[in-house]
Image (cartoon, rainbow, N blue to C red; front, side, top):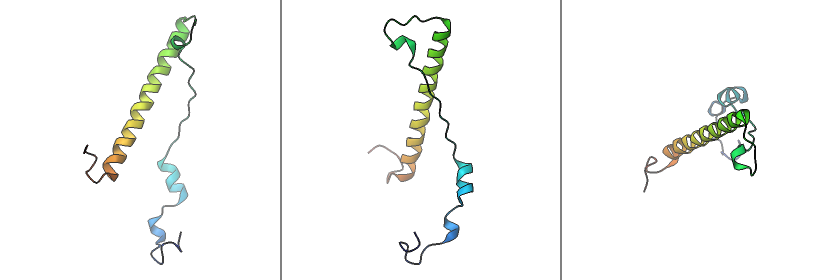
Length: 84
């Protein structure tokens, strides 16, 4: 990166890898298909609970993703994220 910046590179502009690692977290959770979407699924009490939990987690993930995109738009949009 130093050559590309033609003398403008400043070490203090780039945080150390360990500092970046503390700022980000990735959580991976594998969700089963909700049983109500499968044909001929015998939806018992436990299966209904798993389906409800899966559906809730999918909604939460979608909301989190939209929040990230919204904050990103606010930062990079020339109009401060407002619709044109």
